[in-house]
Image 1 (tube, helix red, strand yellow):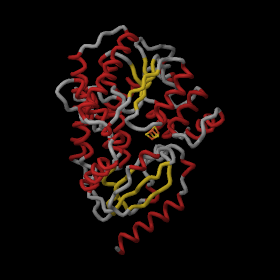
Image 2: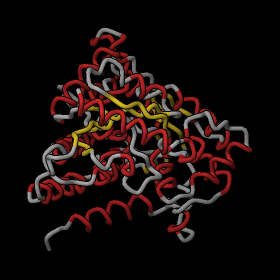
Image 3: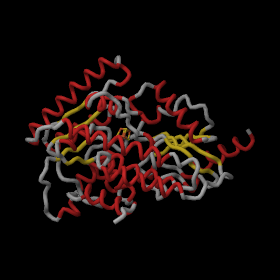
Image 4: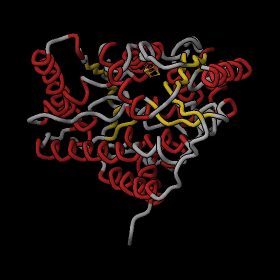
Amino acid sequence: MRKTIIGLQTGLMKEYYRYFSKYAKGRTPDKKVAWVTAFTPVEILEALDMLYYYPESYAAVIAASGKEQELIDTSERNDLSRDCCSYSCCFNGCLDNDEAPRGTPPGPDVLIATNNQCDTLPNWWNVLSVKYDVPLIVIDYPGENMPREDALSYVTGQHKSLISRLEELTGNKLDEDRLLAVIENSRNSVDKWTKVISYLPKKNINPATFFDDINFLITSRCRTETAELYELMAESLENTEDADDDRIRAFWLGYPLWYHKDRILSECLEDFRITGSNYITWWNLDYSGSDVYERLFSAYDRTFLNLSRESRAARLRELIRASEAECAVVLHNKSCKCDFVSARNIELIQAELDIDMIDREYLNVGRAKAQMEILKETLCTG
Ligand code: SF4
């Protein structure tokens, strides 16, 4: 039977949420469980037959279901300031209340954090390790701060140490051929996703489609079904009608607004069309290299948020050029100072909105509308 987009999406989600407390019906995982940050080299975990869960992604799901305020309030009462990253506030509130749309993920046997994204995550994982009293492994990715050969050797040492510790935890032995096959799956998922997002500038598509469907590249990039899903999505987008060219082409620079049904501030963007976004390219990891270790290094040491400011700006300029955007909507995100840094050096007229990707109460819609009006007037008179 021919696979369908909805069938593949449902299958991947069912698999991922199988052991969350609302669905587990008392079953507990028969594999070791890790909680990981969004740019963890999960191919190693997949090859070792572990289960892994992403607290950041789950915070986005919670906000999409409208539950984030009560959970942020709870975590604030339990000493996590609202000024911390909202992903952490929302998820920690979910643990404190033992309550969220899909319940809570199965408890971790190990916590794995990386610093190739921000410095908040290792600190957040530290808080989790105290709560759960399980080992915490932090992987340090130097990025462009170190000559490539030195960085490769340093990161490879940490990846090998991660493998040893997880072999010990799981009792499984890593098969390098299996790891290579899993890396190939991830690379294939990235290739297909790149094709999917290439349609954004040309076709009439709700950006929510991209912001929601990238989730599979985050949580399930090692699975063959993810590439199959994206292949079908690309076929479907090819047949979607062309975009309305009367609207102003805008680049969305920052996170999706998880609490918003359209994931963007559509009430302020009636005359605009989103033709590009940096967020939807963040997991387009480069798995190039001569062996598994170089491939993992290329992918995880050079994530977008771990690049130097100059490299980020160059990458952004290229994305903006491909999007054919005339202006940018830049999110000055309360949670994520490191993401905002990426908005510097962009030679494009822009509106800078004070916003948060989870905490809807942080936004002043009237002010954002006025800013977008000014942007429109500037473009029309410029
Ligand atoms: S939103 Fe920013 S600060 Fe929060 S975990 Fe993600 S990268 Fe780190």
